[in-house]
Length: 219
Image 1 (tube, rainbow, N blue to C red):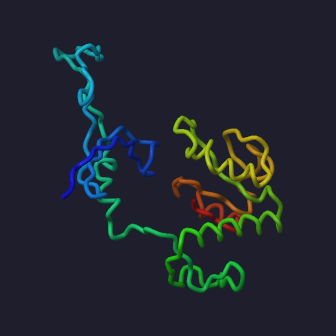
Image 2 (image 1 turned 135 degrees about the horizontal axis):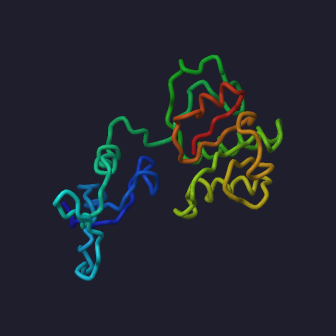
């Protein structure tokens, strides 16, 4: 085994800085995760001058931990990364041709075949252009919630809003985004619904399909 290196990462259910995450030490060797552990605050700095919060209750003195408190899904992220059930590349239905016969009646029945990321990107771009050309720009919508503190790749202020801006959007701002009107529009009436690094719970893709969305694009 090669020399280990430690990286600081914020791991959440999305595999990035997000809900439920906290700073973790990820030990890596030969390009693979060895272990995931909490960050101890005294790792690279003197914590003696810190003034942690202390509370006295029922005869006990309670203080904060001197390490990050990682949720279970963060501690177990190594298993997720190397799970045999993980899908490492895009998949396409074997009888679905974006430029030909789509065989909608085979949904839920047909098998899938791996494709390259370049082909997947071409399909997504082609479907966005097709939906906009046929139904208008307001039929493409990205649900863009969040505070935006995680920067350019954050769902509400990142790549998805920049994408819609190039498709004809007004200057980006948080909220529900369409390709035609920014933070406006009815999410139930859109023709293509972009799920950008988000979950599939609540009233997600299935609800959109029931309301008539013609393409559900997971980014």
